[in-house]
Length: 93
Image 1 (cartoon, rainbow, N blue to C red):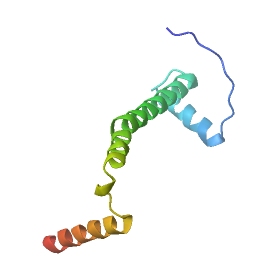
Image 2: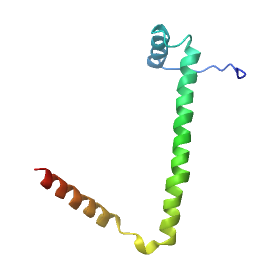
Image 3: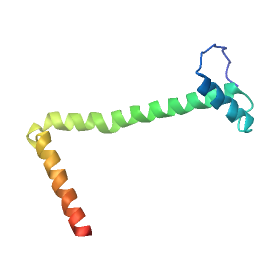
Image 4: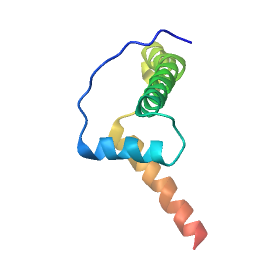
């Protein structure tokens, strides 16, 4: 088991009630477990965002920098999207 470091945090009453309810429901042995689970979720979310940035956003930016002639103004992009959506709505009617 990893080394445990004790910390003290202030919570809102709502947050404290949430933690207590999770423990009382039997899903966790202690409030500390609830908080650790929440932190693991935050870590996973941060890691997913970092992967998205590295794997999708940065390559897209690099592609845009390499081929600026492919870029279109935002107004034109929204017009194209709106036109496609209207066509789909009309086709569904």
